[in-house]
Every structure is written in structure tokens, then in C-alpha cells.
Image (cartoon, rainbow, N blue to C red):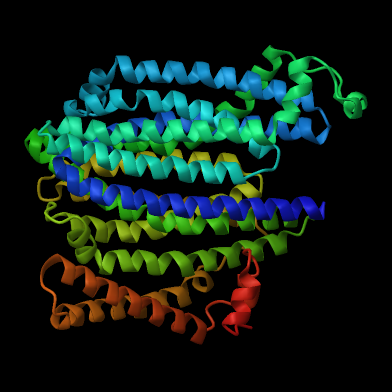
Length: 546
């Protein structure tokens, strides 16, 4: 038991590193891409990518999890033939699903772009992503198989390789096509095609990895014989129909729950384009520019959540163990402490995005629409509530209340649609209504989840204890960032964009130092808090935190 727990935490840490790397690479991808395509071209890319995310989530959120569970179950009983047969059936099932999804994107891009996104110029980008869906489905089968065997390394390496080659090839193709004077839709499609190239590399890596490391499992099944040391445990393998049924029974509900926000994001794309034109009376070109700069702001909005993922992974087993021991008071304490730690991580990042929104958007996306800084300032505030929602979801999932999180996201999505519908239609608010809708919806979801948590835990988490010290430290940090940036603009001798970015980085460095010192001085975090996450004890010793 101890060994499995250690392996789980090691695997979780590996996956977390991969998530952070991918988020950073994603930001590196989207910043120069936004500059290459401009606001108008980026709206095509974002619209097409919102549809890709729906199919991607349906293909990868549930079925690989189902496969890993079935493989792990077979592995626990020493059924190597069952493992291999499950993988082969899953690979065929995923291939069929991938072909269907790819055909939808390849055959109906104009309908999806014009009628669903209300952005006809995105049609070429939608068609360009069709091969990626099939490739991702195939890759998911290999990832699920390795994860079922308790091996997270290939998934992490594979995901990083996929994103890396997507970044390189997508940027090169987009820049080359536009340099050759092809229209913007071609440049956007070239960027999207990079996703397929990354997926080809990803699939090749997984095929080679499985052949090198798991070929001994495939041999008994392929040859139709049972290995001598497994005769007592192998038994008969399940039928193909049963395996497919098990895959769909486990995977479909997970996939549907996971794709709710992806669907809502694509609805958000359609809604913004529609209301900006039909209600706020912007032209098609103006609407594309406004939505494009909103998409650029989302690049930074998504970063804080990546740094909360490690904490959600590490606290789930702790809370689950407390409930298994029927120690509700312990579960309540872990939940409260973990939310406090999440606030200490997420709140300064949100404040930083809001306070430095002007140099971030102007420095990284030179020449973009003037609405960019204001959009990011609102989304910086929203990013904090996204992170807190992730923590609340982790607590509810660890407590066996997954259905509550799905209910919360559905209602929150409806709130976002309603707010967007009303505010984006007003010309004096226009695209600012979209981040306001995001902020309001995530506040609503956080409050609703908090109510569910309070009814489930032994005692209600104390909001004051969770937020008070992190709010004070973040306020000091924000004030420092604002002051240092202003001073940097005056004294940095380099003019233009480079000087702006240099002043911003000076402000960020100073703000980090101020925040770290204030957190330690105010005892906002304790050794016990840090020990909830892998390696936290060493950090506490380094900082002399008791």
C-alpha cells in the first residue's frame, strides 16, 4: 500500500510538471501568433480552436480515463492478456470515434464557421484541424494504457513533445503563409495545422514507447498463448462487446462533464460575434478585431490555473483518506487549509495580471486593439475565482460529490451566457461584457460550490481565515508592482516596447520579493500547510517556517 501511494504521488508530480510546461509553451505559442495574425486573424484562430476544444475534450477527457481504469483492474489481477486486448479494442474504438469527429470537421467547416461561430473566415482553420482529432484519439489510447500501468512518464513527455512541435510548426507555417501574401484565413489555418503536426510526433513517440517497454505484455495475447507464470491468474479475456460497453459506460459521463466548459466557450465565441454585430451594430471586421483581442487576453487569464493544478492533485488523496476514516473534522481542516494555500498562490497572480495589464498586453501584443489592457484587468480578477473553483471541485470530488461540480458548471455557464447576452449588446460596453460575464459566472460557481462544501463538511470553511492574510499580502504586492512600474518607465533609458517590457519585469521581480517577504512575516503559511504538497517540508525548512 505504501509503495502504491508513493508511486501515485510521484506520478502526480510528473504530470503536474508537464501541465505547467505545456501552459508556458502555450503562452509562448499564442503571444507571437497573436502578433503574426493580428486581432482579425487571431479571431479566426480562436473561433476554430474553440470548436477543436469541444471535440478534443470529448475524445480525451473520459475514454482514456476509462481505459486506464480497465487496464489497472486487469493488471491488479495479473491478467496480461486482458490488458492487451482491452488496449487493442480501445484503440479500434478510439479510431472510429476519431474518424467520425474528423469527418464532421472536414466536411462541414463552412456550416460550423458561418452558422455556429458566425465567423465564416474561420472555415479553413476548422478544416485544417480535422486530422488532429483522429491523431489525438489514437494517442489517447496509448496514454490511457500507460497510465493504467501506473506509468505517467510517457504521457508527460508525449504531451510536452506534442505542444513543442505544435508551437514550432504552427508559428513557422503561419508566418510563411502570410509572408507569401496569402490572406489571413490561410495564416490562421497554417497555425492550426501545427496542431496536427504535433499530434503526428506525439503518436509516433507513443507507438515506439509502447513497443520498447510493453511489448512483453503484448506477446501472450498476440501469440494466443498464456505465459507460464500467469496461467493461474489469466483466465479468459472479456469479449469485445463487453470491453466497448465498459469503456463507454465509464468514459462518456466523464467526457460530457468535462466538455461543458469547452462547449460554453464555443457558445461564448458565437454569442460575442453575434451580439457585437446584430445588437451593438459593429461591422463584421470590427467584431473580429474585438473578439481577437479578447482571445489574446485569455492567453494570460489561463496561466494561474496551471499553478493550482499541483495542489488539487496532492490534496485529493488526503481528503479522501480522511473521509474513508470517517474523520470529517480532519477533512474539513484539510479543505480549509488547502483553499487558504490556493488563495496565497492565486490571488497575487490575479492582482499582478490586473495591475500590470497595460504593459502585459501592450508589450507582448504590440499594435493590438486598445481594449486589451482593460479586458485583461477584468480577467485577472476572474482568474482568482477560477483557481478557487478548481480547489472547491477537488474537495467535492475527493468527497464523492462529483455530480455537484457538474451541476455548478452548468448553472455557471448559463449565468455567463445571460450576462454576455445583455452586456456585449451594449455598444458602450461591447466586448468588455465577455470578461465581466466570466467574472460573474465564476463568482457564482464559487459561492454555489462553497455552499455544497459547507453542507458536506463537519464545519463551514472560514472565509476570513482563507482570504484575510493573502488579500493583505497581495494588496501590498500590487501596490509595489504599480509603483515600481511607474518608476521603471521614468528611469529605464530604453524607449518603446523594449523599455516598457523591461519596466514591467522590474516591477514583477520587486513584487515577487515583497509578496514572499510579507507572506513569511505575517505567517500566512505554516509548515503544516506546505507539507500538504510534495516537497513542501523542504521549502518550509529553507524559509525557516514553523
